[in-house]
Image (cartoon, rainbow, N blue to C red; front, side, top):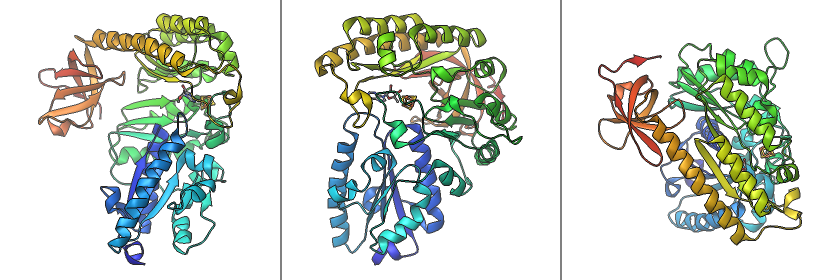
Length: 457
Ligand code: 5AD
Ligand code: SF4
């Protein structure tokens, strides 16, 4: 069967969507390595193409189907050249569409949901045998994590680690509880082992991931459920780990010990992504968010009390069904009251099968666009103001990689801003005090202080 059967095969993984998909794509690549697959530079060179898809907003499925149209042509071209190509769809669109995907796009050889990708190697073998049962969308997250091989090899300076997956919150706009399934927290011992392997491979910052990460309640070595704060306390003991972050949190699960971790855990960075979605209590209730605008503001006050310099980030949706001008004004007021360092804002997009999709009084698209434009102007001004407030300060920057210009490195401030500075390449992986001398729309310019005091691991 040509190239697909030869010992050396190549895989190209295209990732859409969130950081958890980035993590999943890394794991898929690692998983396929023992099966003989090395990374291809482009889909044209790949014996196996994996689309790791996202379903959270807007015509995601349509985008995947049009990509599959292009891959159909690519597959035909490669076949003319005597090469086989296998196409796999993974991630949340795979979960939502299931077998329908192969009916609508016969170019697809396998469909693998987010909880089933540990089955990849078996599924490839089945697909190669021409078997029909190549749609895998029904496993619990527990099985996946127990089966995935241990991490090894070289890692980036900043690495992702999924600690929790799935969500039981059922916000009425959100597809995640249906595509990622019920909430599952990985045991502490597994996470410590994986974090140690990441650090061993060169990681100095670990970003703990979960759809509802602060609901983490994995089993500790004592057999008891541990909170996220306790887990981070344990991970902070890894000597060469310099920094910890976590995302994404739900305000309802922001308990006292996690707030306190921002005061006590020296490795926990002062940046928090805490989606609020809306500033209107009526809309928050219709969204099933379990918090009001005042709860959120009070929580922000508690967090700032624990860590006064914390930079806050949020997600906002405009044009949720029934949102009036007054509701939208309440969102604007909340944003003004908090002052965010970074934000993601979206027009509401009906997701099939979610309660909000069938609610009456859907908001017309032009109204959504108008509100979004107004909100994004405000959010842009807040982000610029925050970045400007950093100019003139000295911040510890963890250098991650070489920049585009020779002699330049790119790293991150504690507040997650990208910082560019002239520094020797050997400082990648080190934390260095940098004076912030300028600011662009999405990054800061820095100057390493004379002598370059390299701190930390
Ligand atoms: N429409 C618009 N935005 C959405 N999000 C999730 N579902 C939808 C939807 N149906 C946004 C939320 C969430 C972020 C990851 O995506 O703001 O926090
Ligand atoms: Fe979706 Fe987040 Fe709500 Fe869970 S908490 S349903 S992932 S928006």
